[in-house]
Image (cartoon, rainbow, N blue to C red; front, side, top):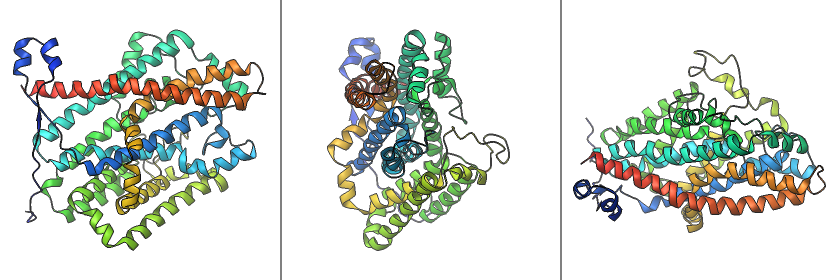
Length: 453
């Protein structure tokens, strides 16, 4: 039995039922509606929202450049192009618009953040609230996004113009072969499957129909949420040393079986270290070791990434041969779909090194706590769901109308498309956030309050 003192108790504040419940619900239900328990919020963790905002910027850059300047994107299928594009491909792209680094970071950061309410207030109410609200919070925005995709591509635009643009610009990296959802029922099933599949997330209709085919990450986030929830329950009741050993074993095993839990449990471990083990103070006391370790990890990851892009691109997917295929074939991998999202060791080193540096450096945390980054981070999910749709509709249509049948004005057309997509994504993302995203959160809280009646 652990002899360590129990975690600190946090007071719970309660919020009365909102006024709109009295207007739209029967009086008997509205009057008896229990007060919604607010999750304990630690303002010192806001820099993580800022990191999410930075990822939103990187994600938008990747979507646009993969569509309009693919040779400047690391790991894209367009591996030849003008010298300036190849220079970007081998330098800034690895840092700032690298698809594998972006989605691996999103998985890690999600796990790092969703456990915070429970770690700060380890009660059964907080746990149950997090578990119940997670699905509702993700489902409604994703459903709306797929409905927009169905209306835009299945009912109106189709995908022939994407093939034409791809052929005109010789872009073999963009997802021109979008799956056209044929019926209402197909669209409904695609939405349902996003929250039902447990592996091979990229092999589903909703992802194939989504521009850039990146909607699979919602499935990964949803499934890995419950990996985090199941693992975090033991944290308040076990020794710190046991948790460290157990997490290390879990992470190594997850890497071996090629599971996203590799990143999720690492994110949970970082949260446990920061909240329960005074990790920041320890890093401050051992700055040289912490900074040195962070720099070594990040440098190793970036060097590996650079080698796979600039020197040995043929080895980029070789890492998968060192994992078992338990989630796919039941044994070692006998196939390798290089178009599927990959869990990568180089990305893992960069992410762990960066977050070690982040927890050590007060200046870096202050930078990411900037209101601009936090603003973007709060809206990052809305941007993520809309940016691909906007680039594949407004962006490509704008460029196509300016180009005609030749590429003489391609640079100008791409610039105009970039500005248009950026402005519309910002505006549409704000509307989506204020209505759909925040609405889904409010509805999830309402459902949680209702089932506790």
